[in-house]
Length: 171
Image (cartoon, rainbow, N blue to C red; front, side, top):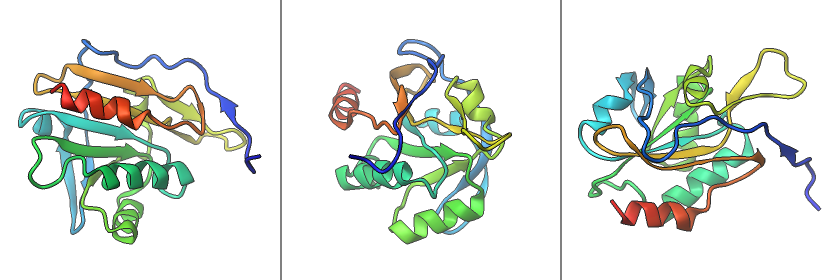
């Protein structure tokens, strides 16, 4: 029996396959530095797997990124860019990337504006004024068209990684 409650989340109103993914600009954190970047800067170069996740200290963030890393999605020679987004600050993202030895880049969205524009915001119970991203995955092509979309319906919840991989194979 888990030591936490499973919480049913309200229905998400996120972009579905075939719809345009909202563009945004936020600080993008890598292994060495961060700077403002937009989603469209990356989709202009090719497909992007946008991984939305709770704050860096939450255990789902570790599980999701360990799985993505272990599957090798978006490695240096891939035609796919894997980017994350959460409410964590650039400093927290830097620590998260360093502690896990990850070479991915993460957008910092402390006001959860990206979560709101994607319809995946989640108000934390018992924490007045704290909104985070529910776990979600969007595969976005070069025209910013969503090719695959998944958003958690409960917390905690994780994507079907084999389903995501099948969508990646269909690119």
